[in-house]
Amino acid sequence: MAINLQKGQRIEIGLQKVGVGLGWDPNTSTGYDFDLDASAFMLGENKKLPLDEFFVFYNNQISPDKAVESSGDDLTGGNSDGGDDETLTVDLSKVDPRIQEIIFTVTIHEAEQRRQNFGQVHNSYIRIYNAITNEEIAKYDLDEDFSVETAVEFGRLYKRNGEWKFEAMGNGYKGGLQYFVDKYVG
Image (cartoon, rainbow, N blue to C red; front, side):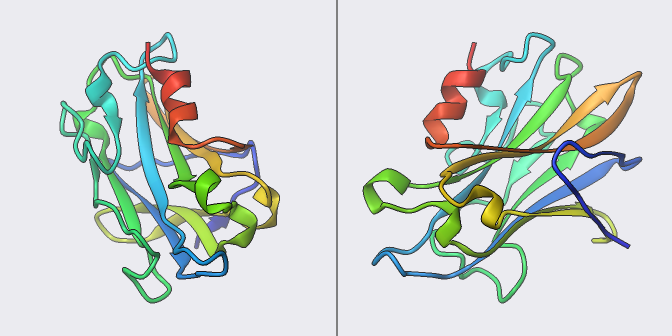
């Protein structure tokens, strides 16, 4: 049974392979398709990327330790009918020892030029699931909480006493993917 997470809520995941699914329904209410992008920032103790390649997104689909892999870029939300449109798969057994946390973000591509925000996106969510059994562990809806934002840190996997845990962050920002690159690149 999945947990609907609230901002700041933490859960122990106890898994080796974790999937992070991002879904939304196609919508052209602004005259453009909504192109949401799921990304992962693999951070060291200093809260920065040890190497740029630990930033996994549509132009770098696999981390150097092969622990995080992106399914690629869905430009419209039309890859599925009610399911995940983009996924990030994490194999926690392969994570480089320098990595202490993995931040998952969602951004709207060209949001400023297209005058788009999450308040206009239909049925958008992020979910954490067991990548081996597909059993949903937790889900976080990206609805009216982010009505004017264009970038969201939705959650993080973090290591505490050798165990991986998940925290729903739910921090929204006005900015795109570059906002997070500026924040996490050393």
